[in-house]
Each structure stands twice: as structure tokens, then as C-alpha cells.
Length: 259
Length: 202
Image 1 (tube, helix red, strand yellow):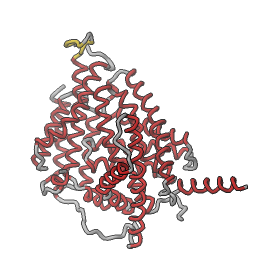
Image 2 (tube, helix red, strand yellow):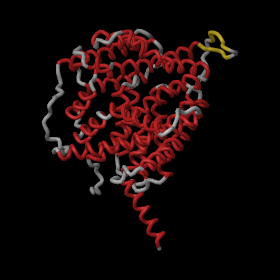
Image 3 (cartoon, helix red, strand yellow):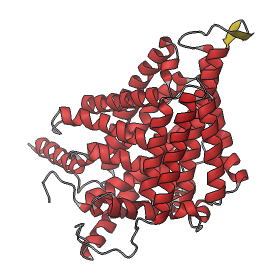
Image 4 (cartoon, rainbow over the protein chains, first blue to last red):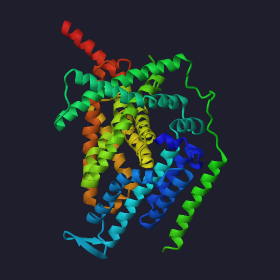
């Protein structure tokens, strides 16, 4: 599902992963200063449309992913209405004797939308970035020590194995007569029963992989050649210019036209 | 064995795979947490936060070298992102700050002590870092101080109990299986076993 989008050859997929990562952090820094509902709303809509136009992600899929996240976003609204720092002056209506002020409602909506902006921008990163390309970019462009980079990639490759292993452990336990849990306490005990063997086998596997890597001559030094090079391209330039213009325009409109 | 302070490849891969396992669990925990926060607000969320420090503390407790807690937290956060967290930016930021928090506690004891109180302190530092980060990023300054205070208190409790005590429990039971015999924790446990054995013979 994920890699179907990650492998598409659209504009966003060609942008350097490191650059996209930096842009996420910049969006967070930018949004920290914002408390009105309009800026996040505009940024949210722009992000989603950029993602579907330049990333080739279907709008329906985006909505499907963001839907459960909006519950989290909504919690910001109600917490702000019920427990505000300073209750606003303009009371709109009241729920069960609690006055709901316009100011608090707006701040709540702003914070909720802010979390949705973070989510949409993160989707932009995840849906357009192949994991191994990200790792290679971190090693080549960010000077991450190869020993860490390749070590992490090796561990990441275990992921599909873990699922198989979990099924195996479950089957093994069932054969020995340990049934399905009924109470919450049993469920907790079962989790522990699964976790320890799963992690033990993960540790064993990683030790073997590490030994294998070293025996094939991997010494983790920086002087090495790469099968796949992640270069800086013109897409990165276009992306940076577009991104900075977007933030700049939003900042300008906010400061000069809205006040 | 390499007694130096820098990590060897074996330790890096093992640390990564433990963190990858926890990265997936972290992600599941987020959905659970968001569900709880949607219902109970930030306080119920607070009690769950300790779980997100476990990877760092377990790895530091097992490998006992500088930088492990930080690196493990970062890898776990990275896994969450690669597996598909809808909140990648904040997750990454939290990975960094929580890692620094937990690492700080171990650094305070010059990476010499990994006893339960130190682990609990690391957990509390970690959740405190989480608190500061979410406070700034999600604009918690807009909430009343009562809610914020309650949230901080629950987070610190969770950091001590879930992250500190819980991590020690998990790592100790892992060590019993024998897979950690090549690591600092496994060696320590083996030494203790031998000493007990010798003492019994006398």
C-alpha cells in the first residue's frame, strides 16, 4: 500500500528525502507561532492538494488516513472549550451549564487544525519517500556514520520476519494448550509471553547479521562506494523555492492583511 | 571483547532491532493513546507516555555505553515514521527530545550506574522532555494550569513506573533467556550467577 505510492515517479518522489525532512521541521517551527484558525486551514488545504497533484496520492486515500486522526484533533477543541487558560468574553452558547466562548473555540479549532497540518505534512513525507532512499540520503547527504545507517537498514529488513515469527510463537503456544485470553489480566500476561521470545529471536538474528556483515568486509568506514547515489537535483531547488514562497506568503498575508 | 566506549556493529544492529520492535509498538500505542486522549483529555494520555521511553532505557540498560539511550529513541522514532506514522514530524522531534532526556539521566551518573532508581530517573527525564515538547508544539499554554499540572504529574509517574521499572523487568527477563550473554547486562548477570554458585559451595 505504502510502497505503491513511494515508488511512483512523480515530482515529490524525486525530491531529496533529507530536504523533505527539513521542511517538516520548518513547518512545525512555523506553526508553533500560530494561534488563529485560518493559517492552519489554508496550509492544510494547500498541503493536501500539493500531495495529490504532485505526489499522485488519491484524495480518498488521504481522507481515509486523516479521519481517525481528526478524533485526536477534535480533542484539542473540546479541551480548550472546557479547560481554557483564560475564558474568553464573547459567550456563544453553553453546554450543560458551561459557557462556550468564541475566543476559546477559535483557539481550540486552531490547535486542532495545527495537528492536522502536522499530520498532512507527515503524510507528504511518508507517502513519497522510500525507506532505503531515506537511509542512503542520510548517509550520503547528512554524514550519518555508515555503521549506523546500514545497521539500521539491516534491522528494518527484519520487520516482515517479525510478523511471521509472531504467528509461529502463537501457534507454538496454542499447541501446548495455552488458549486465547479472556480477561484483561490474561491478555497482559499473553503479551509478555509473546514479547520476550519475539525480542530474544530478534536479538539472536541481529547478532548473526552483524557477524555476517563484518565477515564480508563491512567495516563501517566512510570511504565506500554506493550502488545507489542520492544526488541533489533541480527538483530539490524547485521544492525549496516553492516551500519557502508558501511560508513567506502565509507570513506576509497574516501580518499585513489580516490585522 | 571490545571494552571501548564506542559501539561495535553487533551492538548497533541489536540496538536497532530492539528499537525497531519498539517503534512498531510505539505506533500502536499512539493509536491507543489518541483514543484515550479523545475521551479523557491530556491526563489519561499522561499515564501512557512512559511507554515511549522504553526502547531507550532497555537498550541503555543492556549495552551500558554512552549515547545508546539517545540513539535507540531516535531509531524507534525513525521506525514509526518508516512504518507510516501520520505524525512523522512531531514523532521525530519527540524522539530527539525524549532521547536527550533519558540520556541525560545516565550521563549524570557518568554511565556507571544502571540501578533501578537511575532507570526511573531516566524515565522521568524522558517523559518530562516529552511534556516540554508537546507543550510547545501543540500549544498547551492555552489550557488551564490545573490540567497542565495534572498532566505533568501523571507523566512523571508513568515515566518512573512504566519506563523505569517496566524496562528493567523486560530486559531482565530477556537476559534470562541467554541471548544477552555477549552484552554488558548478560555478562553482569552471568558473573552474579557464578558468584552465587561459588558462595553456595563454600
